Amino acid sequence: MIPKLNSMRLLEQHKIPYEVVPYPDDLRDAEEIAEVLGVPPYMVYKTLVVEPDRPGAKPILVMIASDRALDLKKLATVAGEKKVRMAAHKDAEAHTGLKVGGISALALTHKNWIVYLDEPAMQMEHILISAGQRGLDLRVPTTALLGLVRARIADVSVPAVE
Image (cartoon, rainbow, N blue to C red):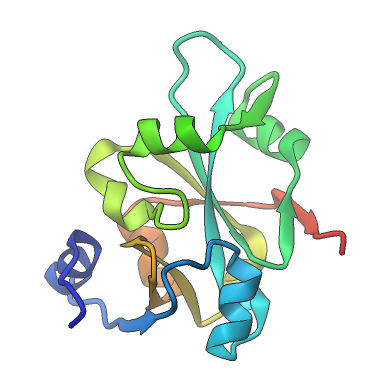
């Protein structure tokens, strides 16, 4: 049975339709997850935790397609930071209270994180994002997601190098 997560309750509160998409919870790589689900990698979004290189600065969440790589320089520029770095897995888990592979902007709305959604998502009617637990993605309408997590649209990625 699929548990009812806070991310799902939030979508229901706002009357946003969603579809729960389970996958094997030992998978961490968003591209592998896309393959297992039989969907194109550009539809499965991963949520990354990024730390500004400034004392006391709050980490940033960035959602990018699984077939893309985060461009830290582009992100630093749009975030108005001198420098940013990827959070180590243990730090990402400590910051969010969620396990890597299950980090979701939807599960963190009450914490007022700054969230960036990579610009290519705007070409998609729906994207798949983590439900806040490993093994569960949610297929959500992109524009509704934007408003709910108060995401800022930004060009922050480059094609992933194979």
